[in-house]
Length: 161
Image (cartoon, rainbow, N blue to C red):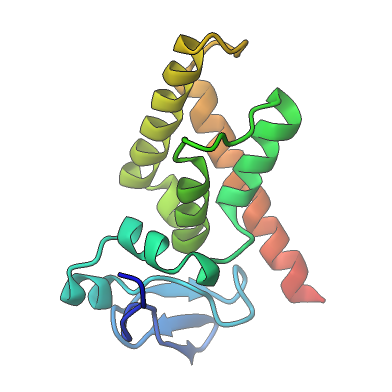
């Protein structure tokens, strides 16, 4: 997928105090995003047989540069000195987290996918002999939740300006 087919992104309309996608029915409260949100449309992606990962890989320049993925990346780099290497899936996961937003990241499926990438990357780096902190799933969950809180707070703050 070098070009992103039309219909893969939500088409937002104002619905009182929220944005609603005309295609898939997704709802984003205006308290989370005063501006039209950016999201992959569940119905459009299903019709085209495209997964969120496919969409992230097909449209990297269209991915939002802010969100929970960016916040998680910052925390890992600033607090633990962990930065994406050339051969890790970290940037793609961060872009996917930004695209699908905090609600997806905190869902059971989203949390499981993010944790699996983090756990696999931790094991790879440990095997490669990098000095790395011990792995705990509880710690990873807390980092993801904190990244989501910060992303929501930043979205609210930028919308208030």
